[in-house]
View 1 (cartoon, rainbow, N blue to C red):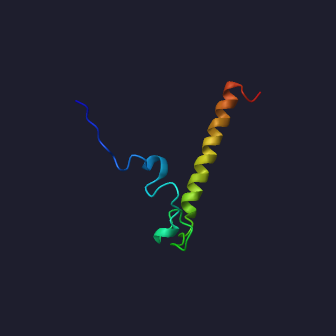
View 2 (cartoon, rainbow, N blue to C red):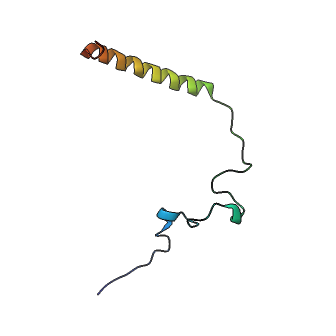
View 3 (spheres, rainbow, N blue to C red):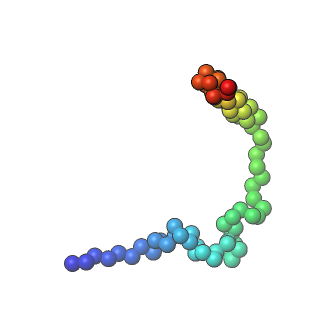
Length: 73
């Protein structure tokens, strides 16, 4: 006996939930957020500073490792 099933959303991974040609203009919403929306909040300087410090520390560690193995000459 053969069992078959039909998934009505099987093609969503290929075309999206509204189909390949849907760009949101005809539904009253914008799928790509090209409209007037919520403005972005303030920049979190402390978080950006921590991220920058982390990247800098990682680069220092990479340079020390490279120097200790002789990769820098």
